[in-house]
Length: 452
Image (cartoon, rainbow, N blue to C red; front, side, top):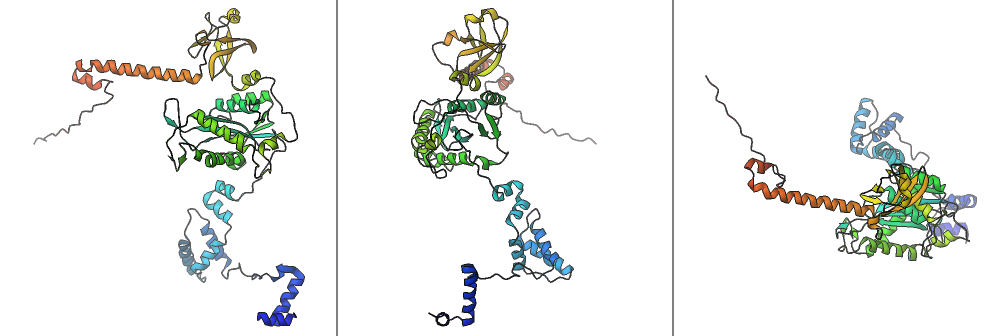
């Protein structure tokens, strides 16, 4: 078909068809795109008036378009300018750079989170970089007293493979001890052969929480030759990988469990203990998460971590790792009947020559039936508590027992004081602590008659 025939069939003038054909032959499909007017963004108003509208639009507090139009109309009248219409003012404000508007009205943090370029870094090899973080889970569990509580989850993830090196479910706010326990689990070999992730990472990437900035963790990292890198304050983008994993836990795992929180309220009555939740999360990420293909890496996390086979750097022994991460150091003086700590007494025959000497003890908060004693940075012995040598006693158990004993004493005080209150004078009864109330006498207004 000739060009003239095609133009007549389309109802297009032959000159227009020839012009389109010439553009297509020269520029391809881009030559057929509608060309924008060269003056499309130019406003037929004085430059000062346009700058005035833009300046008012960027001022704090933010003005509405109608308020800006009223102010500009008044100024234009005073300057003998042609007043712009409301639609013109709106168009000028709309054409402002959104990033500039966000920076002007919402500040640097909002601009950074929405418009700054993000460098998505990935480690070059397994164990080159680990990320660690905590989150409060959207679920309620039952604690030892049968009371509902919202648990926390600590996760350490290998940045290269996205494999999970450790997870820790616990109650109470995150602490340096939780971080140490998580690192211990992450570094040492697991009993489950399907969970091979272990070793000492080159870099541990964390935020600025007090549980990550403790002196104890710094000392342990130096001994393990592991660098701790801190994310920028108020910049969550650097921890996006582990944050996405937390989101997967909250949306994929927890909705299937009793006590899941939806919009802040439990969708079903809580029935799980902390151990039940720990088992459910562990089974999911070992059997499902670590073995399914990751959308970004294109490999299953465990397969990516294993690679073609390599040997991770490991501590010399589990005892050495415990000494660095779990054992908390405290100074103590050796007494004639042993070392006293947390209301317990620890004994060992090796301590006999060190009576009245200052030593350093290291203990595991999870089990206080045994401590390790050092003298002048030299290991002396393991001392045990003779009263609890056949059982395991944690620091939390001792603290719980202390609180229970204090509550029992308060109840006894209340009962005994309350028993004598009926024999006391009225004024004394009002002050009685058994009532736990302060009875205030009403204020009386005194009226005086002025004499002549």
